[in-house]
Length: 286
Ligand code: C2E
Ligand code: MG
Ligand code: MG
Ligand code: MG
Image (cartoon, rainbow, N blue to C red; front, side, top):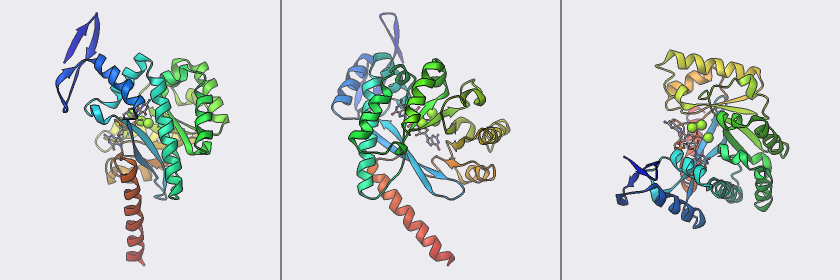
């Protein structure tokens, strides 16, 4: 339900661990505490090349175990409204690079994508901050990908373009996230130094049932390719969608059909099981 306080409207969440409804103010102070105390987590979701089946990277997605019932988007909005987005994003990047370093020791070398919010582009020093973290964790820039929604890029396009160019010149890869949910044209977005677009899952998930969405996905793939962009489809939930995307020449798929986002150690198990499955298949067909 929604509570009013000082004329501001707060959404109020009740969590399993807390039978009483807790105000948004409590959420803010707990979020601040959780960032400092390292109580947040990242889960990782694979991205797979459709033509080859090759694993091409993972997306890091934020999780807050203490407040499981709060949708992550709401947590991000709260962080944006309270200035916590800056330390939160710093935590996410740091954690992701730490994880990259830990996996590299196991000989798992994968690009990790993290999500930036609109507000991160308000801070011109984001590129220096990221540069320092890459140095500290000794991660080559091409192993870090930044996903930015089209709305975030368009809030202040000139500024975004400048910051994104600086990031891109460092060798960091940039993607347009949730493409299709805004109102911008791809031709316009192409002015940004991006190499990849991710078609929003709302178009992909039901493209079997909804002819309009199927048309949007198909024409987006063609247009993006003509502009020299790589295309990721989000929300690939079943084999039928995978098959269609393959026919449509989509480059990369991400979704529950491949794997759900998972904690780092579970991801390593998933990799092993996958390698085993691939080896078994090769034997079967030999
Ligand atoms: P996103 O970046 O578009 O991430 C993809 C979302 O789709 C994730 O939701 C993921 O769990 C979900 N998803 C993946 N495959 C499927 C599928 O096959 N079917 C369905 N129905 N959903 C699928 P999640 O983890 O709840 O994150 C939601 C959004 O919150 C993200 O959307 C992103 O915009 C934001 N977010 C997550 N982590 C961060 C972060 O560290 N920083 C910032 N700024 N935003 C974040
Ligand atoms: Mg994303
Ligand atoms: Mg997305
Ligand atoms: Mg999204």
